[in-house]
Image (cartoon, rainbow, N blue to C red; front, side, top):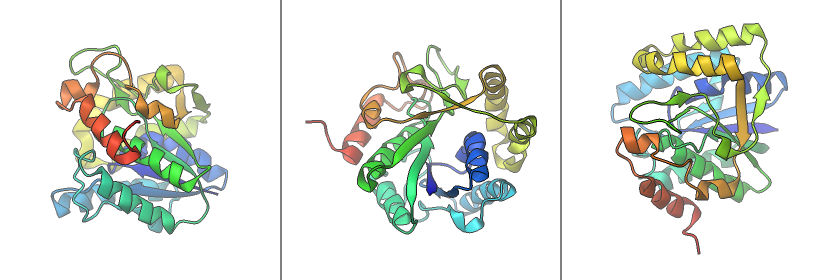
Length: 249
């Protein structure tokens, strides 16, 4: 059995650390596929290096970390526009991986448009592969909030039942200290880390299954975080969904 992670950015894997450790202990093979490219080759290499260092520290082999988006022109922040190329590149990478039985992806939550675009891509790939489960993990969303406020690591109730991942104290310490592998992202962690770990300490870490029909629904009521913060409309993600999954009849 193999689990393949379909991720937009180098560092998205950090939020899935409890799932990664759980799979490793169960002896499940894991592959990490990254669909976004970067305008600067130096930036891409620096970010990839940080991700490799983090995953290697968890026992992941370097060969299992693949930048499928390299050279595709599917740029960080605009995965929705390049979704067709991202889908094709990820499809090709998966074809070389035997025994994929589960895809793990960033949650359909209205937080970052690239994350939601990856959720759409994962749903399409699961349909093509057949009998493949898709699980999602939360990064951040603005559900019930205004302005630039957000919650991190908090699964949306709209996404269904939450499966809590049990973690010993040593794993929590590894999780909390894992940000040290990403020095280029220190400003991001200043905003995310406190609210993320407050959520985890109060509620624990949870993942949810991503049903295909769920991506046909607005992530949550009210303005989405990427609408408020990035100026990306939900209509743009609907257009991406139509291109990836086909327009509804």
